[in-house]
Amino acid sequence: SDDFYAGWYDFEKCSIPIGAKLIFVEDESVIATVHDNRKVEYNNEITSLSAIAKSIKGYPCAGPSYFTYNGKLVADVADETQWKDFN
View 1 (cartoon, rainbow, N blue to C red):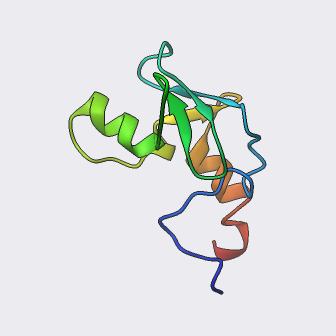
View 2 (view 1 turned 180 degrees about the vertical axis):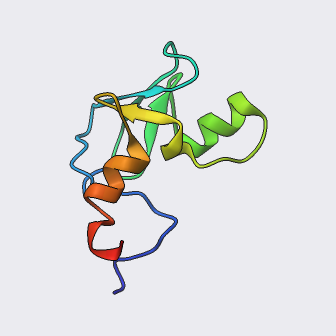
């Protein structure tokens, strides 16, 4: 399917609404706000979860594995929603 590309997490397909707060697992003071279906806002900048995680950890990493939505990792939410049919 043209809609499937493993690199893109789509917040809308994950049922994570615009304006939702995503919290960094290693520091709960780091909170990203969902801006659209792919990007978040952090420190008044439109960016990605992976870019935030990389800036904090110092190496490339999968942002959705480091942020939670309602206490659940974004990566796990995606597995249950966006990627459900591919697992």
